Length: 346
Image 1 (cartoon, helix red, strand yellow):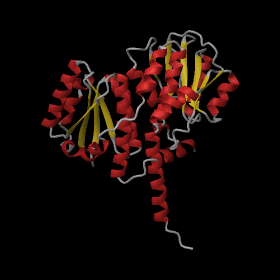
Image 2 (image 1 turned 120 degrees about the horizontal axis):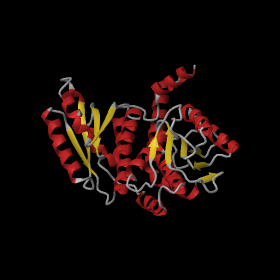
Image 3 (image 1 turned 30 degrees about the vertical axis):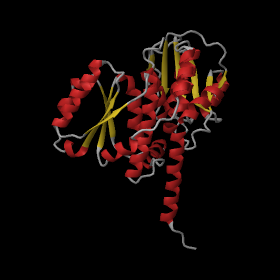
Image 4 (image 1 turned 90 degrees about the vertical axis):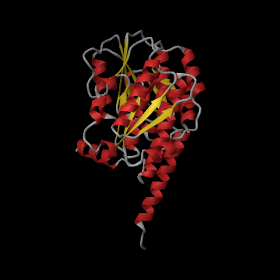
């Protein structure tokens, strides 16, 4: 029998594209499922702490970053994201150290889990509802553990299950006394799927290296979009934030001369941003245009920062979907990352 390997590949590619789309569509359910069905183990009443540190890699810290940026004005304790193998010297018994791993097998946060334990921190594990290594360690050690259900993420990709990790993190913050109960209700209410112009924006970004630009409120979203566009659409992407970028980045647009053919700037505009930020954005666009670099503006319409953050999360996800199709790539396959991890383990 002769097999058409090309047809087989296309069939798998199409299947992956469908799974990717389904996970994007299920974001609101990811949030509601986690809030309603997420499971605590060894929780009880958590002791008071003074700081919160989160260790998670890749997709396991993206949702955390979004929550940290969006709720900066609401947080009653300082929150830091510090991924890697180490637990920093300032991790003490007054620290809540959250180890976030969707798969529960990521080597860096698992290594840091043990070191944070040695420093007597209040370690909390955040992971999926599988019997994974992190969950097993937490149950064995009596470590507080929160597990989110994953049925609403058929792709099984952490970067597409951000509603799960975001909602789980918010519930942990609430239990630690860092966020009020009302935030959970607001978050659930705002988790509605919104239509966007992602397909049209994708066409304008074709064959361009993308520079995302927005305010600090949406820095977590910008980081998420960068990761999704790079990992899923295989499209090199970076991000800058206002006003910080105005102090260095504008001068760097002149060289190399290929910038005008290679780059495109995607500005995320919000009427909720400080008026000075809005003015900085408009002036920055002019400098990009003077350097003959295409400028695309995407305006957010939500009534609150939370609504706009979730709106932007969905826009970014769909943008990565459409650019992946435009680039004719499989958004689920990550051959270079898989090769890297395999050789690193060897």
